[in-house]
Image 1 (spheres, each protein chain N blue to C red):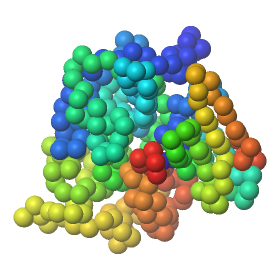
Image 2 (image 1 turned 180 degrees about the vertical axis):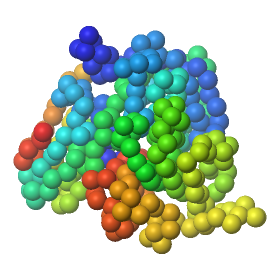
Image 3 (image 1 turned 120 degrees about the vertical axis):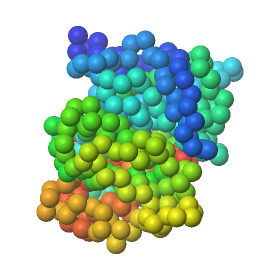
Length: 78
Length: 251
């Protein structure tokens, strides 16, 4: 699965379509379109990883209508 | 007005199953009726986009999944769903859904894996299994807009029984070529490709890089990774190979 699949979640969190945004990995510096990032749903939440180095870029966990967003793996997103 | 349009797309809307059509032993097309779905005109969806579907069980448990829109912009909303054995949502949608059933829809979603006539071509569409769904929407959009960009659809399926939209793809519009490969079993008189897509097949099927083609590759992650790498190896700039990887949520 890739970033295309979480277009709805991202639009909910950021208020706009983010699939074409550019993500820069905070670990290895790889630059990627969000749509092409590796996405996992391991049971609780959604994890987005860098395809180059596998580092976690973003984590989203939704509970009772609130989504917690962790973007600390990113150097930049825009 | 623009604000209203955005809000509609980000929120869950009630939808009713209009019709259920079995395509193959493991796939079903559901026509969905959504009262506020964007209609013909500026607000209609774009070919290649998807919708999120949310089901709520009697105990309140909710599951949501993304499914590509099988219809072209302006056509009634429809999704084609493949049953995954260990799926949470697809077994219901492919076996239990009946006209009149209620579910929730969010969308249309996506601005990356989309095509409209102005995007141009020639187009190399590569489908692995149910990855054909958004590509079929693109082919239908091409017809509806009267576009004449050349299209080659390379479609990998396990067997002929697993080919979705087979009769539609058997009589493609002018300028659209459909090349099947059947990877697991083939009908007795089959003369087409009978193996997984590889570099040799891509070299024979894909438009030459010099034609400046655009590629859309959709299917399981391993299929997409292999085909995208193959196309880049043939000289396609990475930026002209669009990818959409399907997969079970656990992968």
